[in-house]
Length: 253
Ligand code: PEP
View (cartoon, rainbow, N blue to C red):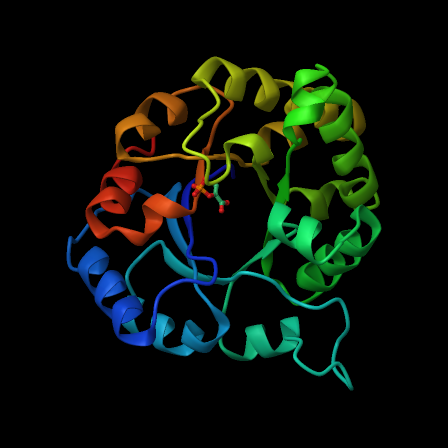
């Protein structure tokens, strides 16, 4: 079933005491989520365990990792396997954030390997895609993002692809304060669903959650999330402020 998701991406921010206070404040707001609404917190690796304990058995609240490695285990110093995440009962992992693609040169093919191993361990990947400003200026964003999907997602069966959450994040809108308009977001999300329909059919495409990411904040979340093909958001900066993120969660449709 297609879910509406507010996902926080804390990136490499917050010391442990601040992380604890932030999550405590959000949980103590007692937000009631319906069955098809989720709040997910992608926290830094050292805080996964603590964060799991804080959210406890709050329905529809989940902790995510911000990354994982493509191998099961072994001599990969500094990396984190999905088997480790599974052993911590982590259910979500962000894969292919634009910062990973840019600073760590993660390719579409490498990301396909990460998606594959995450699915093997029953961890839901939140797969990020999105174009840089030069591509948007050249108006070739559709082709660019379709290629990211084709090269990372299209190796999967219809059953598996429905287990992946997609986050469309135009790079020019990440951390810049510049948000895509709700029309621009809807236009791309509808296009991505069309690409998925072409490969997997309408029912499968209709089951996939597609989140928007790029300077979502309390003041614009409701309008963006209200678009028919937008199923919530992946939120960086505004997810570090309890009141902002509480409002963003409450803006889910
Ligand atoms: C992100 O990190 O995925 C993101 C969208 O960041 P921001 O909300 O700060 O633009």
